[in-house]
Amino acid sequence: MASHTYTKAAHSRAITKYTKDKLDRIEIRIPKETGFKAQVSEYAHSKGLSVNAFIIEAVKKAMEEGQSSK
Image (cartoon, rainbow, N blue to C red; front, side, top):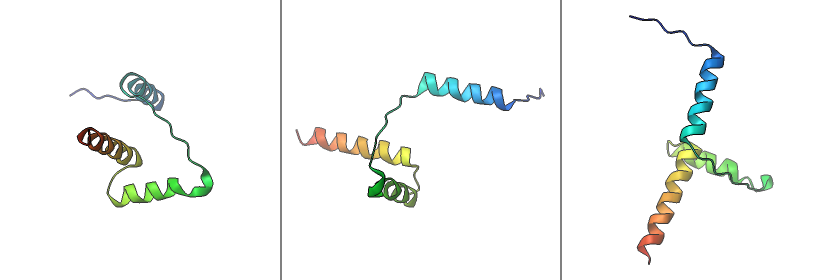
């Protein structure tokens, strides 16, 4: 069996390439003083989700509900 060794730099390059090729980014900005980021994070984790997974799920649900109300 072949043994593969990966350097941290090679691993980092692979992750960067995957992210660039396969993922899109959407940024949201929220005022720091609202504490909303912490609330979203706590809620997502209480449901066993990452913040990213929770936001994607919430957007998909909102879009489905929007389609059904037409």
